[in-house]
Image (tube, rainbow, N blue to C red; front, side, top):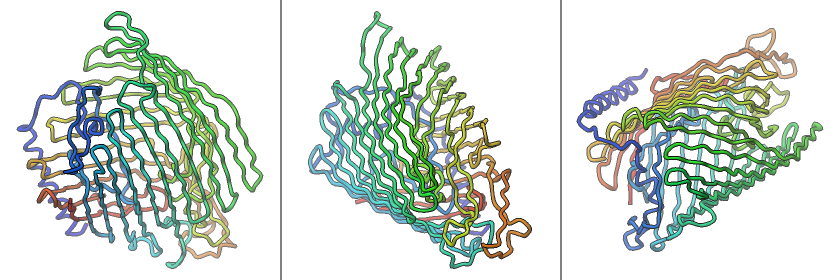
Length: 586
């Protein structure tokens, strides 16, 4: 480990020693349920002053707010070539009109910016810019492993008396390489490049007043890549909110909910089998809820109409046109704030997409067979509550019967000269089976400025055809913390992750060493279906200091264990990454 990395870790250790020495002095009494932070509801209770450009509170007498528990969530990305972007930001404040840059080892370059303006007291327009790039792992791979992501978005917001309107236009472009070549050597100038671009248009209207609907969303995007893959999707959803139907005295109430959704998706590929797929999915989720205090019983259904079609140049012609329905029920019984028991039943249809699978693994071959996943039933139960006012917990277990469980399998060597031909890509495969899972999380916020959350997940897959699921960790865990001090001028962040070992497949050359140079026509492939990728842990730290209201500096440390672990077979990640930079607000 280099001297600079050791110095960086020592610096953070000193900071965190100082932090935790102050926690006892900063404890405060919190309510049993944590109230929403201003940032979570500011869209409902503020407008923009056209003269000052600042948010001001408006009359919220007609608005109703419910208590919101802070969710335990994970936005983890492994410290791969794609990078774990943990850029710090003071999320306690409404941050707008700023520009920041950072630079670090592996030639990491980070650029972030926002510009926005109030048109009047109710209208706001703005734009965001994001760019991150790295030169990659030159010491491990003689061929290109560089990566860059650039994103530009514009938005228009209206904060009306009765609701909020939001319109977003986004463009994201990614340039990267299929650098995980392991089965045979390639020359340094071998073309392994891939590029994707995605254009998105989204709109939503959230209604605050009592009316027919609560929220309407419209989402659409178009995705393309270097190898003529094309995917378009449009979705319209409506939440009609909760309607009180009848009250049986003061404590027993009957209400109804309804959600409607319509999705259309069209995907086509231009290489190899030239797979195409088209899906039209219409869903309705009605529900009745009988509530007494914090306890309730709900009963409803998930109904779907699915029209799907799959074709390929190899002769595939699959069509589905049918209606599905699944019972939906839940019982929630509150014994006390500390003990809340719940049990439920559900099921449904989920459309898989090329765009969604690329998020899981960007090293896909541009020829995927896309099918929806059907959860025939899912039974779950658990317990959650507040052990103390500042300590929340949740534990749950589930078992599901699933058709077309989607996971990723490594592709073979191909007899062609192409970036995806070196056993360095993956394809979606499907199997039916049973999925069992256990999930637990813990939230601790001993002071108003410190939040700690942890989560642990375990899943077991019993598949009908495959002996084991590929490239899916059975165990993963995370822990995160945010702490502000010195009158909110200093922000410290910590994110730690553990990912268990994964099963995978890989290809080798029979009768020779992987390092031997053998011309493609003479290749004799051999698949190992029982390979494993080792478990790993990833530690990330961040610090940002406001020198002035309009100027701050930051430092980031990713993968501080300095391990070149593999996220997917052949794809090693960057070691310890150190970045520093500054942000100017205006």
